[in-house]
Length: 185
Image 1 (cartoon, one colour):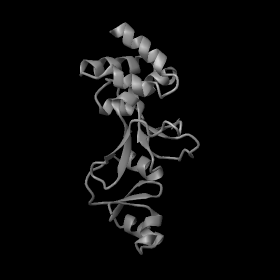
Image 2: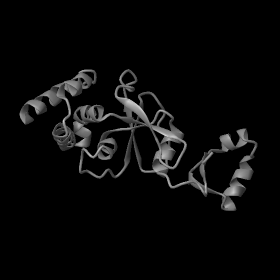
Image 3: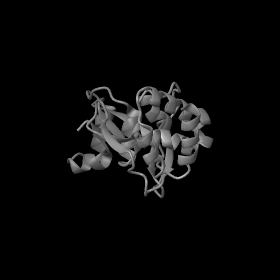
Image 4: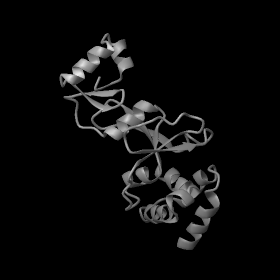
């Protein structure tokens, strides 16, 4: 196991103090409070690991996901993570911006990907879902994010019908998205 919490260490027969000693001796490195990683584990994104460890349903969204899909030139200054509304927002050391998404639409367009260099997985929204969310949250993320991502997505051959199908299921995104599609079209 490349990532370990004190609770997991106890389940494997290692005491918490044994884990802390192993960290002090250099066998493990501390990623964040309560999250440790084998010193010899492959390189991995510690922010992703912390998000996935703190909230198993963590899902990369908005600017972070659009940047991964190369649909925006914006470089995110934090990792945008969605969790279901009503969930407790964890305290993290990483630069993570937690977003609360409606439980009824939380799984819409969501898939899971492997965290490179780790045995963990993290959720990520599809490009279509991210564009619809950018239009829905345009007041918070900026009007340009959704518009620019939409233009690039269309340039790559995106299907507006599929995008509108997703947007119609997400409140406050269908109208602005439809108007922008008509203006671009």
